[in-house]
Amino acid sequence: MNTSQTHLVAKNLSQIVTMGGDKLVLLEQINLTIAKGESIAIVGVSGSGKSTLLGLLAGLESATEGDIYLADQHLTSMNEDQRAHVRASHVGFIFQSFQLLPNLTALENVALPLEILNRSHDQQLAKAMLTRVGLANRLHHYPKQLSGGEQQRVAIARAFVTQPDILFADEPTGNLDQRTSQSIEALLFELNQENQTTLVLVTHDNDLAAKCQRVVNMHAGKLSELTEHKPTQ
Image 1 (cartoon, rainbow, N blue to C red):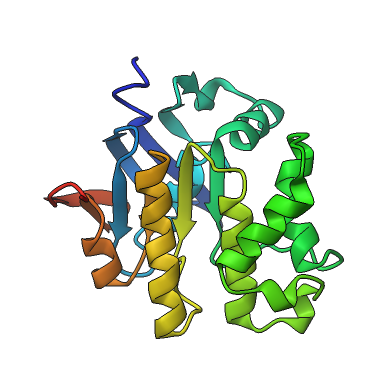
Image 2: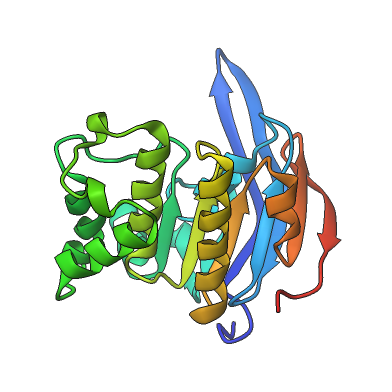
C-alpha cells in the first residue's frame, strides 16, 4: 500500500456487541478508502454508527471483524500499546465529550501531547494554538472554570497542536456558537490544505459536511450512500 496515495483503509469492517445474550450489530461490512490529504464527512442520524466507525478508524477501539490500515500500518493486528503509539505519532482526535483532564489547565491540556512526544517548546506551541482558537485569556483556567464552548476549543487546540497526519473530529462545532463555529471550520480546512492533513469528520451540520471533498452517509451501521464534491481549492 502506497501512503502517498492512500492514508486510511477499512476492509470488511464490522463491530458486534453482545447485550443480554443478544448480538447487536453496530457496523456491518464497512469498506472505505481515504486518500492522503482528503477531507471526508460521515453523516447520518443518531445511532447509525458514525462515532463507532470514527473510534475504530482512529484505533481507539478494536473491531470485531475486518482490517484497518492507517498510514501503512495494520491497526487491527496491534495491541492497545501499539495502537497508542500510532495515535501519538500520526493522529489528532477531537472528542464530542472533550476528554480534557480536569486537574490540568487549558495550557497544560494542550501541551500534554507535545510532552508525550518530547517536542521542544511545548508551552509556547500550546499557547500559540490556544490563541489561535480565541482562548489567549483562558490559558490558566481549569476545565471546570470554562464554558462548554471554551472546553471544546481547548480540545480542538489539543488536537491541532501536534500537526497530526490525520485528524478525526466527532461533532467538532457541536458546542460552539455560530461565529466561533465559522472560525473553527476555517481552521480545520486551513490545516487540511496547508499541511495536507487528512480530515475525517462526524457531523450533523450539513453546511460543514458540504465543505468536505466527500460525504459518506451511514444508516443502521452501513455505508448507504457516497456523495462526491469537487476538491477544496
